[in-house]
Length: 440
Image 1: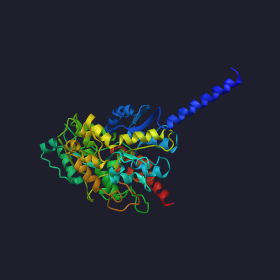
Image 2: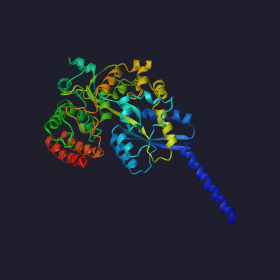
Image 3: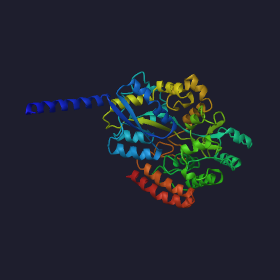
Image 4: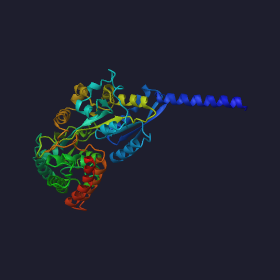
């Protein structure tokens, strides 16, 4: 091959390679890698991805499904280090505003502006949580608060009536009354992790009058109210909870309630859609109440699992196209018609609650979900004011590590390896180091 031919071949190769890159970046033949959490709603999205792929030839979606703690660790590392492993990430309301402000996420504001998507239909509290300075950095796949879920047949059989706005003392008394060899009285998360154990436990701390920090960023992890709340939580699990609580998070408690191994469960409101699904053995047998309280009027959390696009993805257009599809009104119709109306992702779009089929299928839990989501106060969820906005988390970068470390200590206390006081005294030191960083 002479030099002229070699040069011509080289030009063709470079041109073709450039064409492939252009095609990929414009949404052509690409495989998008989506990191997501291992729960029912996300598995439903994966089962329906073929609908998107059929309507968008050349775009394939590769789901990487992980447990909640593993997802947070993997995605945080990838996005912070700009490794580019993921084109789409599933992240919570805790991460979105911080990562958006850091420039780690794609600004979706312009991409969501078309009338067909109708960004104004997103529930305002959820949309606000995903925006920074008027720019939206993620779209909600579903939103949630936390509620008490209970098997009416079990409670009725024991002569227990659950009020719509119970106190934790009433819940504890009910749990102990129905607790027996056939089923535990209540299931509560005990698996270590700020998004596992401390999601419900932080709301318990707040309604008991405790908090992670005061307005001057002084840690309050071993303050009397925090200690009282964690002690109550531990004692309730010991007297009427599931065995081996440190191995239980969302999915384990969901299975236990579905299979009749527990009578009650306090957790994310999104679980109600799975309890009322057509294949659920407890469909129609469940009752739902506001999150239990002590000193506050409400104690539910406010959360959303969201889809975002890392700023450094090479497939931005295709990624945005997919997340718009997966969070659209049409997707909700698709889930309802294909999988069942009770499985439509809740707490994301206002229009969902006007769909006749959804209203009928979700009649048991949709109203209370909206009630609680509308009633909670992310600016001051507890008794005292706080220098951040958020309910079941502290909106500072250090909290992910602080929450995980303190959760491990509390899990050790739940397992009887150390006392609650020992756990929270050690947790106080960890939390204060992060608090001091906010004072600088």
